[in-house]
Length: 401
Image (cartoon, rainbow, N blue to C red; front, side, top):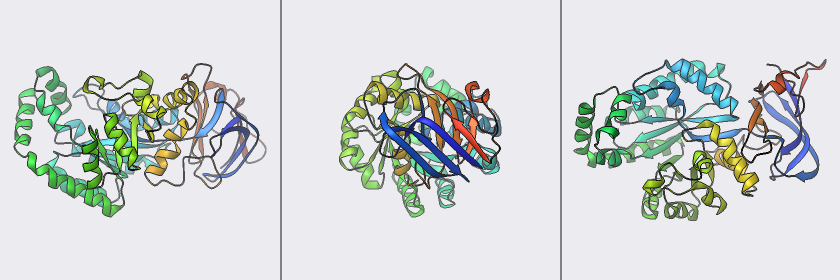
């Protein structure tokens, strides 16, 4: 398929917006022709498709209410539609492998991996897997090692949520965790008690997972670093990505050593972290200080584009879109995407930024050269050309549905 995309504002690799056209051939960008002066962000813009390294909003599709499961295939198909509609062309599905049964179990990871294998050719965007491995998932290490060795995992993060969960045994805190695990609160208490007795085993668990990832060439992140010392220790283990570090001290430590710092887009939109009461830093300030490398959707896919747009337009962060496109791609070694340039994978998103700083409409998404129209402004203007070229213009979107 050949697409010609004409836009008044195309984001070029040097970070400027210029008028021009992009020609797509067989899933790749064949040519980019731009001219004229650089323009400010706003209105309709053609931007690189987003790369989302940490997104677990799909869990709501898998389990819309605690303990209420939905078939994996249906959940994955709906997640795929959400991702495309939000311009996320390379999502890393953040699958948590914990000590629990139910939603965050090894069984759920297996079912998601198998469903993705079966459905991949029918999905719109390029799904990757981010394995969030809990340090106390002691009995699942051989299974996780097998996933990594068989190249089914694209990113690993080491998570240690056990101390916080174990410290808060109040019924209000335990009940939702027990429900998502398919357990009663008393049984969940017993599970935590048993794990507490095995706490020392976690060091060998972490070492085995990281060593396997290193052999497979899979990047490794640490999650929720709280101090500079903790960040240094995790980096020494091989965690070169800092996934949602909690404090400015941890962020500055990661930045000083050239590590990737991943912060949450919902944090930017909300003006602070939902974990602020636990000392979590506001992400926007870290971005403005040049200390953030990547923004990720975290628990809400629609946050990614408006967060970047808000930073770009309202806070004057000139490279804000790179935080959701080229920077995350580079952080995990995906050299074929993230910028609009000849030879790159044709992952593009046409947005209307509107007048408000973070009111963003996704008009169309091009994923691997396949175009999807999302808004009626495009569908109403659909028409075919006598040549094999279909034209996707900012004032008239014309693509095969």
